[in-house]
Length: 259
Image (cartoon, rainbow, N blue to C red):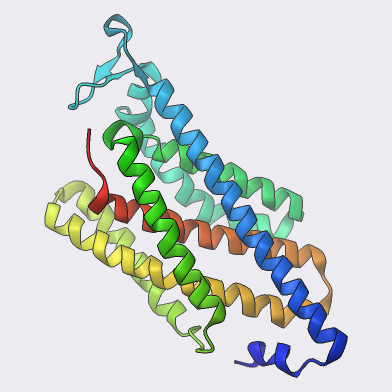
């Protein structure tokens, strides 16, 4: 809890500077995350529009709900390319993001985050072909409200929840393994359990990451390394973005109405 006491024990102008800097830092985190969400939404909507056709003679395939897929749609959702689209974001997170943070400039890290958001949009575009637009918007709003409440609690709570991190990350690893297994098992019961557990895990991670972003800034603000702080803001934005995105997808399992 030493990080939180730093603000309280700092005196005079220094305390004010840290408080102002923390507010600016959190605004940058949330602002970057919001732009990323907008990029994802626009990319998903645009790709979904290009993936379907109303011309039967131009259709490359047909979905069970009757929608006709264009050549692009058939390639993205039915060909082996779908595995590339599905796994590329994971490869970026596990193989590319850490190297980008260590070696690239803050501007390049920001660009990398936005590129990742666009990639996620491509991988999520199929939801517009499966679920109604109303249910997608409704689920997004519910997710936004829940996320705001959880993040606010993580920011304001005096309780140290840093110990949650290891447990929650282990839960994410187990969740990924279960989801991969269910690709082959196709068990509705298992999918329901994955959705419930996943929603709880990423709800906890939202609060955990918010507190971590705050404590990291307070611990390093005195060093004055603005380049590092900028990278930390983009890293925090990515963490919260992933939590929001996963909460949205798991909630969509419950709230989404299929066409």
